[in-house]
Each structure stands twice: as structure tokens, then as C-alpha cells.
Length: 334
Image 1 (tube, rainbow, N blue to C red):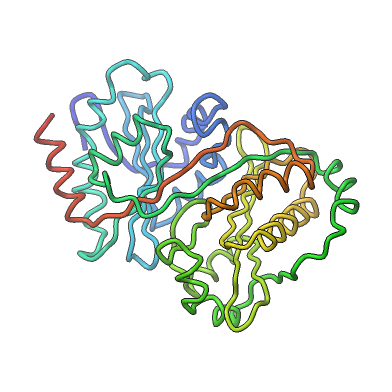
Image 2: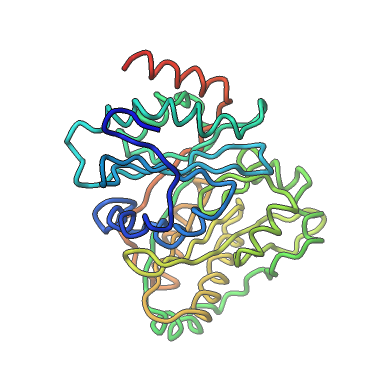
């Protein structure tokens, strides 16, 4: 499929080296880019749409979207632009290709009822304009959540954990399928989850047995408290290598300060039991009131270094009709 000098196609494993050049410490998410670790998984996954826009032999832009919740939702996951094309006027040409991407690549695989979703960083004005306004998300934000970065060496963490864990904390256990009976009631799902969504690696999912099973199979460390008849907290931990080294995500869903601390310390211990060297902990909380709790506990109690990369993200949702109209509008303007 061509558009003048720009051509769009599906990504291949041979694109890995070119994509890595887009994932340096200067180009995306402060260098903590997950794409190098997940590139081959995305290429092979039939539910992931990994589109590459190229000019002659140069990779210019990539876009990634994925079907989630058994096809009930389409998540516009991410995009990257080759740094050498910054400021060259290619953004306008890329937007010319977007409507065709939506029409020919994404829409044929979706149901009429498919929900369209994306997560955007509030401080990235250019991304907000491109994704939210041009694609039809503007004004449809569902929730906000905070992400904080902390770092330390495993040996340093282990040497300090015993003296900083003297206060009794509520017990947590690895998720088991019967726990779903305590997670589905409104006392947990409606009260704790934003719009009933579970955020894993900042991506929204329905809280369901099939999704939790998928996360466990993927190696996620899922913890839940033992409160009856309904749980009060749930967290998901996972790790991967980025251009800045190992990152361990801790996605916390709760409203209780003590439970929040308990989830953090359990995931930190889990990370230290598996890995060596420097680890960056990326802690996500949905309840804004817990942000200060996380900062204080990680720095003062766990003596982790707080990195200057904190961000606030927003979850946006709309429907395919809006997206189709927005795509047609883009084409008409260009």
C-alpha cells in the first residue's frame, strides 16, 4: 500500500534493529521503553496490529494497536517516529496515511460494538493533539492515574529490608482462580477499579477469569489481599529489560494506605528474589490520594531513589463510529 513516498506494511522480525534505534534513552518514555523487550511478541501476536510506515529503505513511523477482552476492545497502544525525521515535515505525511490504516487495517478486524481505547500522557501535547483530537478521543477521558519511578541495587535493598519491615502488614497471597469470587463483587470492582477496568502495564482490561489467567501465563506476579467477602486490593507485577536497564512494574489497585504499602513491599521482595543489579520500580496507583503514600514509603522506608520521571496518564474511550468519522475528517483536511 503506497502513499507517494510513504508505504505502510506489517512489521517483520527483520525490523527489530531499526525499531531499537527508536528506543534510545532520548526518544521515548525517558528511556524506559518496553518495545525492545516486547517487539517479537507483538510481531507474532495475531491480535496485535503492528504497522510500519517507511520511506524507501528507511523506517519512518510505527503504530501498534491490539484487540483485547476477546475482541470487545481495540487499544491504540503506541507509536514511534524515527528521530532523524523530527522537524522534517513528515508528521503531515504520516497523518495522510493514518485514515487508510484505520480503514484498511483496523476496522475490518473489529466488531461494530468494539470499544476504542488509548492511554495518553498529559504532558505530551503533540501526542495528545494527534491521537486525541485527530482520532476522535478528545474530551472522552475516563480516568487518570499516576506513575512514579524508583531505583536501587538489589543488594542494597536486601541489606535494608529486615530493619524496615518491623510494622505488621496485612497478608497477601498470589492470585488463584477462586479469588475471582472476591474480586467481581461491586464492593471491590465498582469501588476500586476505574470504570471497572484493570490496568496492567497501564493497558485497560476487563476484570475477568480469562484475562487474569492470561496475565498469570505471561509470568505476571498477581497479589490479592485475603479480605472477605470482597477483596480490597489487587496488584500486578511484571518485569522486562529497557534501554535503561531492568524495569519492574507494580500496578496497584486499592484505596487503603496500608494495603498499598503491603503490595509494594511484596513486589519489591519478589523482584529481589529473581534479579540482580540495578532495578527501576515503576509504581502505578489509580487513587490519587495514594501518591504521597507511595513516595514517602519508597523513599523513607525502602530507601529507594526517586527518579524525576513521574507522569500522570489518562485513559480515553470512544467507539468505532467516532473513529471512522475522525479518520474521514483527517483525510478531508489533508
